[in-house]
Image 1 (tube, rainbow, N blue to C red):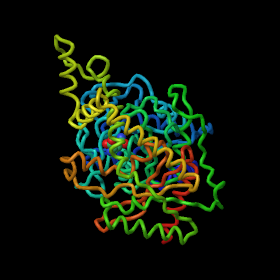
Image 2: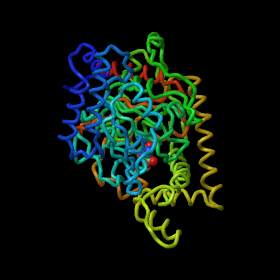
Image 3: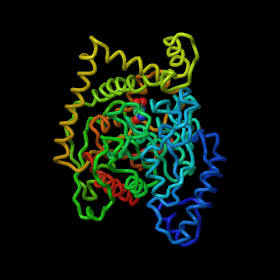
Image 4: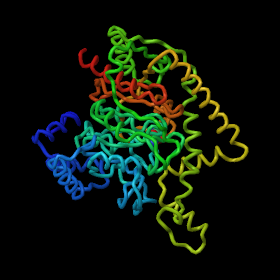
Length: 475
Ligand code: GLN
């Protein structure tokens, strides 16, 4: 009983061919069979079944159903769900229970979704491989020796391995798009401000955005319709309603820009580069105009990203001191208590980033690092505004390689950071990006392409993503 899409599933529900209870039972069964993947930190079996029963009754009574009626959804362990544990993949929050719902959770519930569990991730969403979770790595279900990507690895693998229909993750520098690419599914990072961050545990607040994992573009679009919009609890959430009315764009002549530097970068696997470049030619043959655009800032994006995000993280994570938040270590002296709490319960990568962030913010270094990185961010913003005057979207690789082997990069943080080269750009400038699964490498692993559009233009982004998926299927 695998469901191809949310729409198909909801039609089956309406026609009485299946029930929410059946669907939940199917996914619970799959989760149990795939425990070794370590995708879920907690499964709400009893609650999910109870909610499924209520939703089945609601439908039977003829009451109007929500957009996500019966949709079995997983949430990354950085999204607050009232009366449920949320640990950010960290020991420091191991016993922390949320006392309120994130806005996205409120919206999921309002639209009749069923939340099935809390998904494993890199600690405080810092990482690209899920090897930084305090609760063990998540395995890629296509090849258990390979990473699922990160930081939302549990959320990606859950959709990949049919452990739920949809997952919500978070994307600060690629954490939805890159694991989606490594798992062969769709990963959408909305525009900064499209989705409220209220109740999302912060990593770097001016970059963070809640994103969506799905098996296809229309499912991702439907979830975005449900979770987007303004919010009185998050002043950065934009007052703009997203509706996936793609018919409006049926006859549009698309222009896609690309930076040749991205496809020619030495870090890009040659087979990936070749398949992607060939595909750009195919798009051209199918009436989409492909325009090369000069871009000489590629080598600055990763450093700018890691300076600014670690600076923000060092401030955001100061609240985990064992007093305001975090597991307490009872010592006589308060300073010692804070030191021990933070030393004992934060993992290595989180400590590295707090130290890096504190360093770049310190007097004497601020101008050399943070100010420079802010300048890069501004230059990129100007560049991107100019590019979108000429084009509807930018296309690029998602990651330089397919899913790599456990341990391959974990001893070299710089190498791990550099692999974020294609995804951090969208977060630096706040634009939406989606990874579209398209190809298979000769090593057996999937990969695709990333599309990015101008701020709040998810409509063109997703319509175009759907179009290129269809073109690829026809090839
Ligand atoms: N891999 C990036 C990092 O480690 C992205 C993380 C994210 O998007 N949360 O910072």
